Amino acid sequence: MKQIILLISAILVYTQSANSQNPHTTIPQGFDEIRGNISHGKIDTISYFSKTVGTERKALVYTPPSFSKDKKYPVLYLLHGIGGDENEWLNGGKIQIILDNLYSDSKIEPMIVVMPNGRAMKDDRATGNVFDSMKVQAFANFEKDLLTSLIPFIKKNYPVKKGREHRAIAGLSMGGGQSLNFGLGNPDQFAWVGGFSSAPNTKPPEELVPLPEKTKKQLRLLWISCGGNDGLLPFSQRTHDYLKENNVPHIYYVIPGGNHDFEVWKESLYLFLQLIFKPVDSSVYSVYMSGV
Image (cartoon, rainbow, N blue to C red; front, side):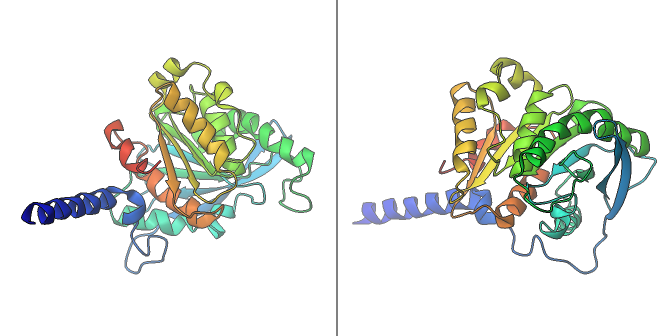
């Protein structure tokens, strides 16, 4: 009897320990709620000329509470979904609140976050039929706009660190697909890549990572997350399966019961922000992938 009690106790301790290590169970309540008496970052609207589109385009830029022009910062390019624009993360994702709280808790590295309009066309508003073929193609065209116009503009006008090691890209849904396509497709530009609930615009994994051994050496972090109840989960799953088969280190984070919404995207962003622009410890990856 005593042995049975000890065995049950051991199982309970193990279960509690495993659950406590699962990031989903430890997301703090209020991580996306405004706090009093903390420092706040600043969000500016910038305008840059797009060589690709041939017109001025807008983006939002978040600078951290400690921002100083005398320092240099890494940059995260954060992309929106098919029905959004440069304001989607601000309005729906409460990004400025999440960032401010993380800085207050000393959980992230100081960084600049750029939120562009990922629909590279002259009328880039999220109006009418957002699934129109021309608008969908504009999301693919944004790759050129990002690389040839926006990134150079940020380099010129903000104190940023140079080099791929100091540049990240991530996004939700359509922007998640863009992030995987652009980030993995341009390893000379991005060392940190995150796709949250990536949409069907995501290229097949064989195209994303045609040379697994080379990708292993170039990437600092590859993050893939999705809600467990999201109908788009298969697009993330197939990428994970391919990466796992080819032994490419990555995090595959499935949120139990999660749907295709900002609850999933905010949690994904909250965790992703804490991992980028820091020394990488791949031994912790299994914690995020528990239950997968």
